[in-house]
Length: 349
Image (cartoon, rainbow, N blue to C red; front, side, top):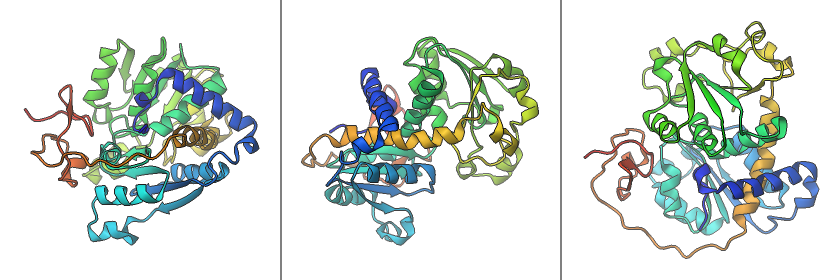
């Protein structure tokens, strides 16, 4: 069973195939209206969402398929204590594909162990958001003609920003991409992402100076400070206004620089920037629907599997308090190269 939990679940040749399908769907949307006829998507959103949930539901309907959605776990058996395992087993008997957003890091990986049908990671805590990465890459290809050789600045909450983690990992697979990581020390990228960039030999500069970085960029990827990931709201209030992109600051940026943002924004991009021809974040969001259409069409083209339950139980080894293994305690410990296989944090020795 092919799932989509991370961009690395697809080869570059598959990415190119997806992009060609995406491009054809943008150009000829009506030609694909029956690809998912008779199929059903389960949209299980344990966390709030606007663009991801709406774009996935719209994508499935535009392909001719049906949707059932959970947008409020409090109105379902989750509120009664139902485990992720039981929810996934049940829903994979009803649907042909499951789209999961969850607050726990590694939840999509856990869900894939119990699903008869493909699981798509629509965001797992502060870990990854690979369908946003597909959207980001498609936007770069469509508006800049490709990814290789770009100078990309990522600014804001790089610690908790799952869109940043996913995008950085994906971009390491392309040639000669240069990164400028703009964040205060408290919001710098996690160690596992920094280690990956070093292992891949990437060209990386870390700085706290947004205005100083702008002149050298082809793309600026702004992010909001993730309030929902903070345990200390005073710390959030102190950091939330660290970077605010304004028209005045953009005078230092190249005239053809793209401004991207996974949205929602809070105060990190001034509304006046919306009128700047370099602002591409609303187009980025629109293109996300077509990219998700392509991904659904790609994954739906496989039969459901016979469910074989994995071995369960064992001593928890992950030290990440946000890992899915904290609450879903039946999960068997899984490790990979010294890290938790679910959330990728370090493990206890």
